[in-house]
Image (tube, rainbow, N blue to C red; front, side, top):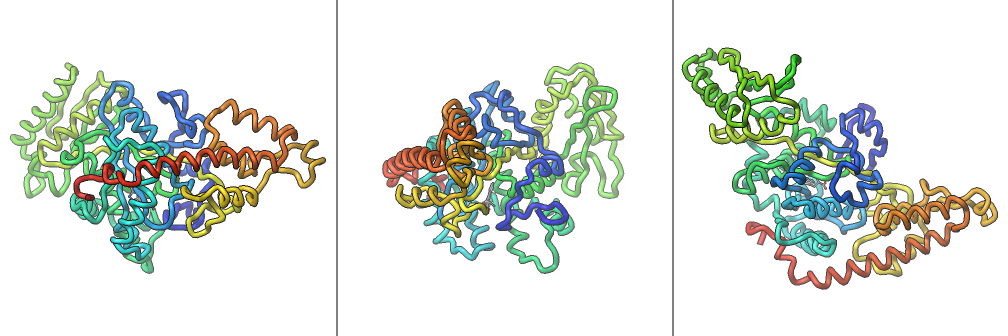
Length: 460
Ligand code: TRP
């Protein structure tokens, strides 16, 4: 993070002060016990924060539709760091989500100079093939390219109206020197994140975006923009219940009963409010008081648990009236695994991570050289034990290779007590990683000719 506490999504530095991030940006903590069939990353606190995850968890429990969206930068090789998001995508898919994958080929073109053709090639061979091998189900996965989905680009323009350079400066720290590619990319990403809610791409439903914290600025931007675009806001009332309030904007004045000169046109306002009121009554609330002049509707009996239902109703109403009717995205945040050499994992530093197609020999060398939490001598190690918080081998078992909690605890206890030596924990990691990589490589071979099954019609 920079001095102003900003997160730079393009930086090679990584923000790992997670407590500060949680409090500074108001993330909620993830409680694994509140999730159905929590995955390994949830159980281990690696997925540590979220925004509105409860919205999708509620969908899971009642069987309502929801989607998960992720994006990939088609440059470099896919490594373990990238696989963490896919693990979560697969978990959401198993809980009922449809999956949309954005290939950020425009972003790669603009910020890294990757040609679209090269981006396509890398996306399919390096990423989508591994996503298949990691177990995504092609039946409800849809991979598209930013460059060939005009709806996404259109949204980037339309929604760009709801923000300005000052907001970009506050969120990203941009200034006069900032390359405009870095101004365009976040807007296209906003388009990526919201477009699955459009009628042509699955319709109004919550969309969850699992990311590393480095991508949170984009989520904050998207949430802010969607909120500003909403025609109806739902607020908690001080005296209990909820209030619906109109949000008058350039594009909706006449729809919401405001004349060109800015006055309330009571006839049209009253009829639109009556219409709105009746859709709230349809939800089962009998005590509803509207104030057409102020453009508010009070629902005293509504609880915060009703908020989502009411919002969904209002958003679909907004759509019928000509608005976009967008929900803010839900998101989850995961901790980064340490790089094997101590700094950030990166495709440009092959020693810092394991690539999905590293062979066993290459992987073994990397693990053997990786930072250890062991003591300098066997004698000291037996006496003091190893430190799992520093040990790459242990952390890689925890993040990637050992999904059995009990086995992991045993390894930790043995290591901390000094019974298990640093070389031995590395060997355990190598053995598990060997099995993991071999399985992945077999799966890749099975999918090699079938990657197309994951592609959206506009990506073929
Ligand atoms: N900016 C992301 C990256 O650098 C890629 C991306 C594009 C993305 N669109 C997205 C990620 C939407 C999540 C959601 O990796």
